[in-house]
Image (cartoon, rainbow, N blue to C red; front, side, top):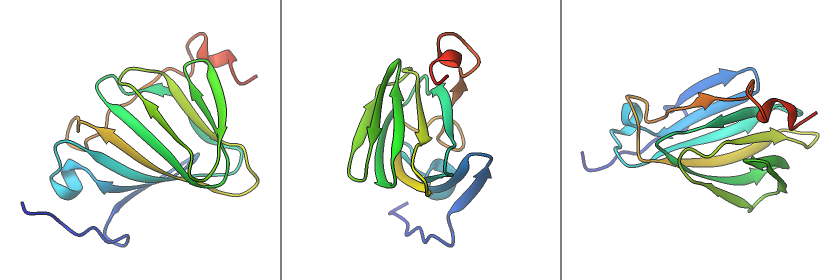
Amino acid sequence: MAGRFVLASDARTEELDWGTLRWICSPDVTGAVAITTTQVWLKAGLGHDFHRHPDQEELITVLEGEVEQWLETQRRVLRPGDSIFIPAGVVHASFNCGDGQARMHVVLGPCVGPTGYEVEDVASEDPWRSLRR
């Protein structure tokens, strides 16, 4: 495959309790093998709870809003233009701490599985379940 244009109207979209994912580049969308990218919208006050990607690195860039970003037990508030790099297997979480919607651009690599994305939820495990109390 020589490449592919991905229009917003053609991208695979997932609606979740905490927000929306729009898959821009993944094996099932573009045939990619090295990178998976998605646009993420977090609803006000909600977020993607503590999780990890065992075999994938991740880069998150905030495009809009304010995001309470966790890297293991470290917490920072990221604003538009701020980014975080997360090595494979490292626990992290992203929560919208602003009043409106937050928007992020996320890149993971390499692709894992048919959708290019793997995730392990650890939000119910210690110490992650008690960090945001």
